[in-house]
Image (cartoon, rainbow, N blue to C red; front, side, top):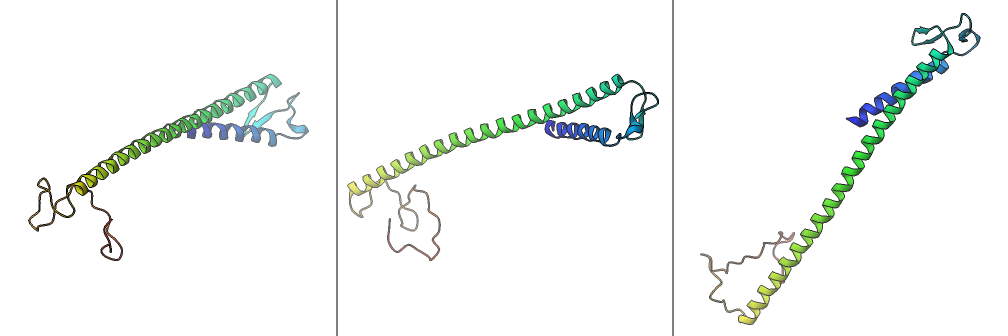
Amino acid sequence: MILILGLILLIAAVIVGLAGVFGNTGAGHDLGVGGDFSIFGYHVTGSTGSLFLSGIIVGAVALLGLTLVMMGARRSVRRSAQARRELGTSRREAAAVDRERDDLIKQRDDARAGAGAGAPTADVPRAETGAPVTDAPRGRGHWFGHRAAHR
């Protein structure tokens, strides 16, 4: 929101400044005796000092707009850097969890291999179908049916 407001102010100040410069060229627009300065139909008659003051106001509005744009850009950069840090932290945590899971699976497989080849142990319950129930996560389905060999 700040970024959009800053852009609006900056663009408005640039448009007013450029309209003032390009709309008042030539000898008929001198601020001397009888000359006037006009912007969007508003005629400024008076001294060069009042025109200078108007220019300062337009410049201040442009500076305010530029400041708001920079603040908005800085905020978005800070937000994206924080998101990148959090993403890196979550990836490291996920990698640690994956390593722990792989270690537990390896320990379970080593314990089963040490208990006997193919003979079920007493602590492995069986489902109603007679197949051993495992707590290992199921893998994704394969494209062409079942795998030819066990892992």
